[in-house]
Length: 315
Image 1 (tube, rainbow, N blue to C red):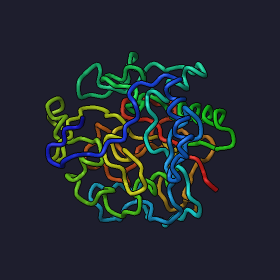
Image 2: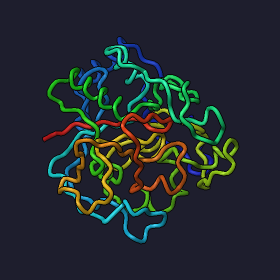
Image 3: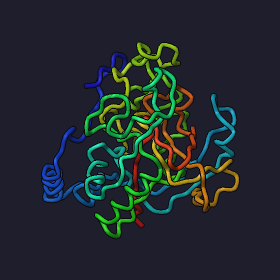
Image 4: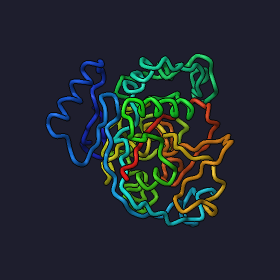
């Protein structure tokens, strides 16, 4: 249970920490038998639960005067989504990703950016994997130490499990639209990072015992590394952990600025050697928890603070 010393109780929606194939199938069948929920989509037993996000428009990027802003966050662009979309309520969990591994034999992949070798210094080691990212996790924690290429293999498997659903990673514009959920502030909850503990697992006062030099917010959630997905409050679209916990690979390639983006906001040219991840993580300080913040890595990169969220179109 999260120990939020300065913000009060948090509504939790975490899926079970351990689920066998039979248990997951039983839960899925029970959900379908109940008539489901019109605000959600759940397309197969091991498919992720999706929230229906409405059509709408938003302003991509950050204004020129935003504190900690970087040049690649602009110029701001107005992006419109004419149709609703279904987006993962949660980041993909260890349990969900393990189902994919069991079914496909996809390699786990050894080597991940962690501070396993020297505390506080992140380097690529030859030991860490998604099953051992350097800190303890349960099956309902978000999978980490997975690359963009791993994420592509995962969504390809989902599309075999649920033909015609067109699962994929979010574009960068879709991700920011979903993370903002109608807001236009620095963070989805407002402009004050110190109010973020109920909504996000980032660097607050909890990690300071281990990482005393980190710049932390003034609240504390009692969580050092990842938390079970759904442990924090959802945003206005019903999406959990859009900020913090683990960052999330998106489909797009690195665009040096938003000036030349197409009207859709998507940018995925051939031969891309840097892919974007968004949202910050358990190890992100205040500047990198801003909703407009962007990170880029090679598509084969694995990191103890980067995971996966998926979507599918509803048009």
